[in-house]
Length: 287
Figure 1 (cartoon, rainbow, N blue to C red):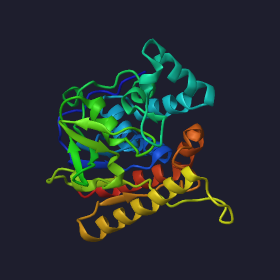
Figure 2 (figure 1 turned 90 degrees about the horizontal axis):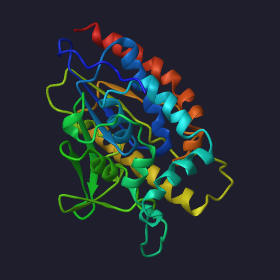
Figure 3 (figure 1 turned 30 degrees about the vertical axis):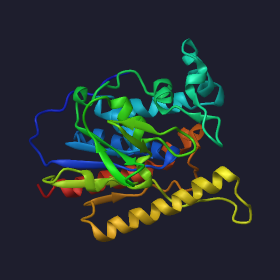
Figure 4 (figure 1 turned 120 degrees about the vertical axis):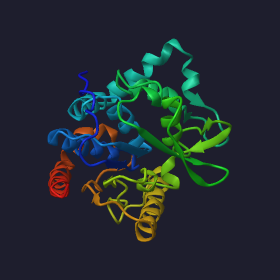
């Protein structure tokens, strides 16, 4: 997999980029990153929640956005490929991939899942990144968002993506962490002060489907989570200094676990990519 060139010393405006959580819909972040690459600019800092942390970790490691597009489409092209990636972990006890817990005997170990699906070339530590990255997780017992920006990158990303019921919580420095989207689905407030421009990509969206059909238990849980996350985003946008550029790809026809529709999700985000390029070009003319 090709690597993007190392960013040149900062000479233009400082740009902070927030990549929100939203499960498979977060694959729409990839076209947004392509907009930066197409314009020949790099963010000064990236902040990611959940799927935003995963994609942010790969991009900040120096992997070009177009390569991420091809990788995601290949990794999720069919169910057999997904199972094959999990099967490759068999040199370790397969039971380690699963974590028994009361009421849910198939809770997944998020660090093992990352090992199966992260592309080659992702840094092992935050200090090995080409672009500074902050991942956002939720401290379960204090019920607050927590910014992670140093040390073991995989542990931090695993904590940020630990969706309740699906993944087991992750312990970071003695604190029990779950998915960052629970408390901060669009983490623009963690972008460092002093940025000239703040860009946020919101992929939460609302539940979508046949309005006459009763959702399955998992669909109901994830749908309810989407509704709550939308409320959190709206509250933060109303009461905090919001991003200069807010992009919301039209991807609400896709569900949280629709990773096997990677190609369609990325294609549906193309108009948002064009919207972001126009917004960036307009904003950059002011500097």
